[in-house]
Image (cartoon, rainbow, N blue to C red; front, side, top):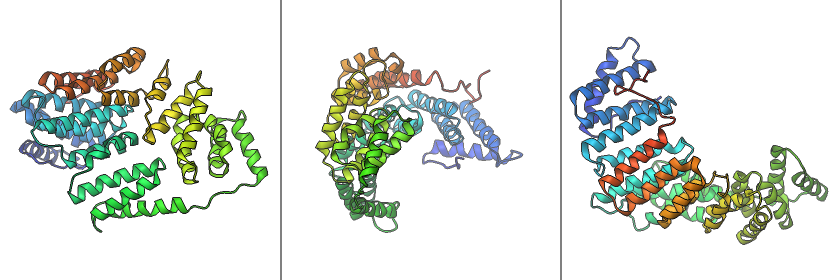
Length: 421
């Protein structure tokens, strides 16, 4: 459960004092219900005071408490109410909103719409730039951490160049640590090793996560040094039959894992034909193959061939797109095919590339093709408009897009944070 912490700023300190006093009067101050009631008492006090910064601070505390208790519907509403209060009090382009959008992005990591994490972080970055300063390393590091938490490794690689040119040792070391982990996850071990080396040149023993980086660096050598598996011919033949046969997915994917570790280059088509039926396994399979010494181009060609043969099912293009995203290839063509028809799993990844391109028309077309993902795609479109020309109207439109996306599932709370009847 969330441990009460007081951020910097007089509003948070004043609301915290009211919370502490209310909690002290509770019969069972250690229980969740008592803490929730004390935070709501602080919210009522803030509303009565009429200072919007106090109201925003009270919603911040409730958002943290509810998120820690997995009451995500309430936490989402609290985050939105906090941003709304700050929009009204300070204006939607004020520096006070930087932290609020960042906190909302962290909350969205578990929302099963990873594109929204980056969009919220981009709002935070845009607001930072509006304050008249250059983009600072801490902001980029926060972006990398949020993308890492959301599993968006390809987007981390897209943002990686933004850390260059900075000199602050500790935050720069942490940024390279996150990048090294991500490179390792997708089997890009040489890049992982180089990122760990930069990281360890910046961090010192005793710094946060120094030991984690040291272990990660060592693991890149262990992966490279792992003995190549040589399977007996009879076992290899049986594995191929298991992969090619009509087996249940769990058994077939277990066979694929073993064949990827001990098969030959001629097994690539059958491996990826099986992987195409469960595209989420492509990352693990390709990492194994790369660590065995297979060439990236060889794997890429095999995936393209499988995708071409399975074009009616589209799953082959799903696997191909995931591989291309992980390895810095242009995945737009594969994503467009993978997102055709009713398939919508990778719509967010395609939307982020269209956001990079500034392609508003492409986003509109994607929204027409996938009406069930329209709320998410409207947020990406609003992010594009806010980045093109930041204004109060653009920032408010972006907030409204997030509110519309959250409306079907966010909690219906009254102004004092209680569920509506």
